[in-house]
Image 1 (cartoon, rainbow, N blue to C red):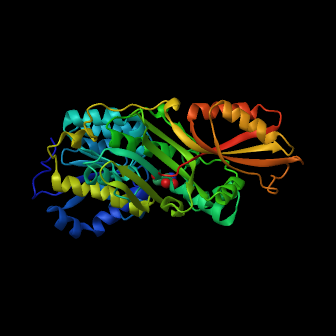
Image 2 (image 1 turned 180 degrees about the vertical axis):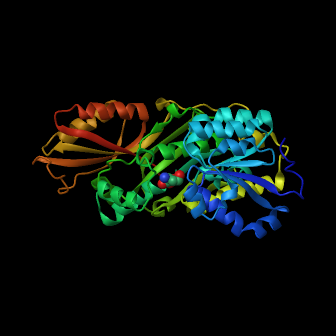
Image 3 (image 1 turned 60 degrees about the vertical axis):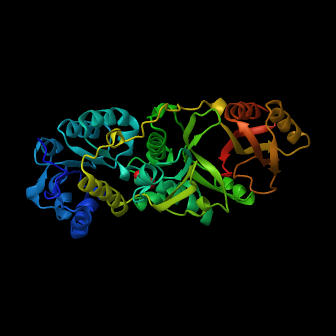
Length: 446
Ligand code: HSE
């Protein structure tokens, strides 16, 4: 039995699983803001148990030893706990914890985007069955109350697109490369020293963290859980600083964007890739570890959400907002509270590459002789792909690149993704083109 969370007189009793950076932030700020939260929610919020695999960490955070157990199972088994806050991270153990908590009749608050992206469908089905709430404001864009805005503030809108800078580590790396002209590897090493990158850095720089967040946003905006395997994911690992410089010459900055967008067929595109953004666009001015998400609704038009997307304090703020919502509204009556999603009449499904049209930046390393551009234009023209501009800088050949070879940068008109990929492969096969054809998506937000 769990206690009655809708009673205004009893405190909301919380079990906190995990005492890493975010867990410590939740502990600290829940206590620091206790009076304010109690006043606003009409009841107090109380952490009555904590699980931590590292007792020293819990002690250093000032958590009384009497509250701490090494096993999250002990929290799930306690009948007095109303809600478990899952901050242990990872997928398998976190899945067992969230499932166990829901089965035991508890609400759950989680910051775990990987868990939701991999197994969100199952967990929300279970939450719905058990009529418990599974809240996840902290899973995307840290302290920005974005999911709340999508769920409540934009409830009357069909979402046409979301473009998000949702990985602070990548945005930090791209900002430093752009502002200081440094190499990718050099800035990555500094980001690691500062503790920005995830323990497994590939989650950040290969785009997976942003992809998990894109999937959660897609689920919330479109009412179904796409499969991770259906997403197209590319990170910033190995990005060449020359592309940042060429993009700037063309009037663009490069950002790692999570893109969720309705395509003309009615299906949705969900993916992550380094993308050229006009230098004059507000997303281009988002610097360092900050996050920003541009949401276009069919009624409201464009809305923008900006703030700190990672770190103990901002993420704790999001976790506490979910706890405040539980303390205030308890079980609620609306079914989407339990499923976590809108009940869409027909979930749209994921678009195939044939259905996605975009503009592209393409950089080739070519031989510097007459006729080269004509051969390249022919290959593109045969696939109905137009060129909107070309630059061929005279310098900036990479170290070790052979004499007589130059970079050639083409801005490509709207092209179907499949056609563009085929053209790219055909260009790489030409004897006048050397090395890989480097390409990036271009978004003009028109
Ligand atoms: N590694 C993530 C980031 C942390 O850099 O944004 C928040 O999910």
